Length: 331
Image (cartoon, rainbow, N blue to C red; front, side, top):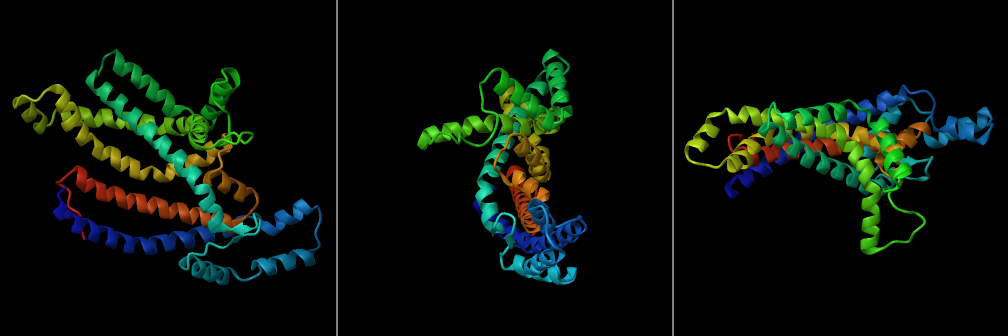
């Protein structure tokens, strides 16, 4: 895309961002109403941990937390807080929800970006190799590997990775983001975080790796029979150039679509992976908030995740125009 198209892209992004506002508001209302159907609240959890609590004391706590108000009143106050960028207060963690989310966000982003990078690179490589050696031993071997990685449950794969690489071989740490017993800084700290991220990121990437490899193989095989590939061969282009600059570029479009659609599922998968590997991210925080009936914190995480997924999908639509000049952005 040339520089003259950038104003069009900016208009497209501005329009999509405005359209995203009612979508996010609708998601916030839906999340609030669904969570109201869940049994119990933070007061029940606090009373259970205390061992005993009088009905008067529990009623006082509900009044202090605003849980004694009608649901529609709580919803109005919640939406008012959201539109002022106030996600509320976590009475269980005794911290503002936004502060908790921002503290855990870097760990989740690191895990997601690393997993997506592994899945994209490995999926592209396997898909290209499989398309080049279609119906040969390499293609069949990759097909078996893809089937296995697609079928294995993520939590089971994570547990087996801990048993093998941490327990049996001792190559990698089994949990957490850093070695809490060491005071690393600089490059030593970065290397320690990298070692801790390898197992959870690879575990999270396995399912998506299989999907991307299959998708790239199919798109590459379809491209090899297209007219533009025959034209490139007639002009004397080498097979390497045809594969990398023609067929592969065309295969990136469905891959990009799938990537945008799977951002939300990657966030969902992070809940399991972060719990298995004790990774201090938003997924684990969401799991802890469910156990503690901390609805304010859970609502904040769900809303924040929805915003991230919406923004990423908008960016994916814009990137389409860079990869395929035939696509015009409507503004």
